Amino acid sequence: MSSELLELTGVVRRFRPDRPPVLDGLSFTLMPGEYLAIMGESGVGKSTLLNVIAGLDAPDEGSIRLDGGELTTLDDDARTLLRRRAMGFVFQAFHVLPYLTVARNVGLPLELLGTSPAAIATRVGAMLEAVGLPDTADRMPRELSGGELQRVAIARALVHRPRLLLADEPTGNLDPRTAGQVLALLREQVKSEGGGGLLITHSRAAAATADRAYEFDGRALRPLS
Image: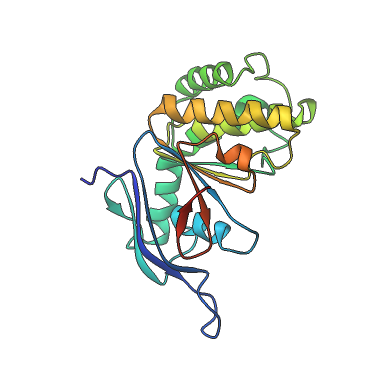
């Protein structure tokens, strides 16, 4: 098995034959326990990059390996199962379901994996404690602030102990103070769970919280200066 957690080699993704590729031979690695940030202007392909890593989109060329297994050879069902088991997602818009309690929102990945109700309750309680929301289990999302909702989203993304966390502009809707708290929590939780994290951001302050930070232009990652 490869020592790299995530390894992209020569990844190409094009949407039109008469236009340059959105991803053009991109290669990089993410090691276990590492938290990596990628910055880039709008339209350079950051969302496309996340989509191909998550298996929501297929590259036209290249290899994507997670824990030594090749993602590009999996069929749709296998990629869906891999996302459920091995990946966690945090988005700018939170995507917390408004009709479920906080506990049900956080426990949803475990429900989808068939985990027992007792085990879900124990793990959800531990995650809400970890993100500083121990008394919110029975509350509805509409009762929470934006920062609290993002903490719920982080708890949900990590409740099933994913190998890879993908965070897409997770602080874009938060004020600077709350954003700083969320970024610190995100890094702390990624490290404590022993997987790896990939943060997509426009913010240099956010990128500075990562172990490595890069600028992305669609073809290559260059160390952030």
